[in-house]
Length: 284
Image (cartoon, rainbow, N blue to C red; front, side, top):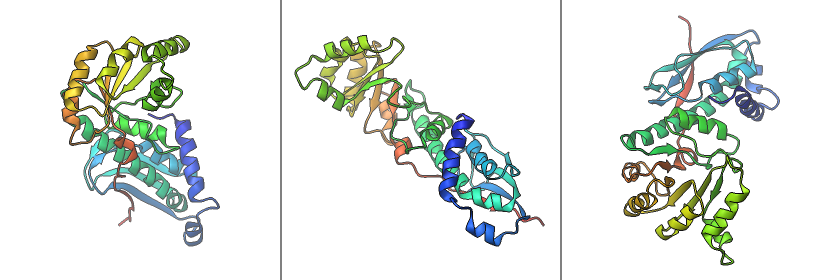
């Protein structure tokens, strides 16, 4: 679960963006003492993520609004299912509605897509993880959604681990520096608790990377045969991560090569938000 302070920071910014000087429509048309009850209803099936974010939008607009969760993050649901009930001052409900839906729909879309990848890799050792290809400002929520879908998180930010990718290596070795020596020198400078991951795009780079002390070797855009060869070559000396060319049609075969981790940028950078709606309940 994302820390409530982080949720409130993100949701408050979204509310300020959506109604910088109030809700002109609601404040003009809706009586100040009007109340309403509304249900969060799924228009399609999926995996829920963001119920606390959904509730926060209403709480931050008007603490008198009560949100009752009818499902929990990580729960699967079908079209037509009610996932939460909202009750309280009508103006506040209408003001918070779009922000609450936008964030919950996106998070649930990520959780739903992640669950499909996790299912495709089931029965193998491979963990499905996200990347830093997230929506600026929403990384905390999108990472939670990946977890709600059964996936794992990669490093959160550039500050969390050393991850030498192709451009780092190109600059590092441009002057003729030996890769293994350069990595060992970097390892001597880094804190002893820090993880070192190195990306390679050819099998002949693997031994130098291992000699440099890599904790994880990322095999980027490798064929299935080369992934199997890379797993055999590394032989438990480091965590093996596969990246590049991963989609729902290829992930099962990639997982079957024996890699430990499969990183999937598509979980967050090209996901479709799930269709959820807020339907006012009219009392009989």
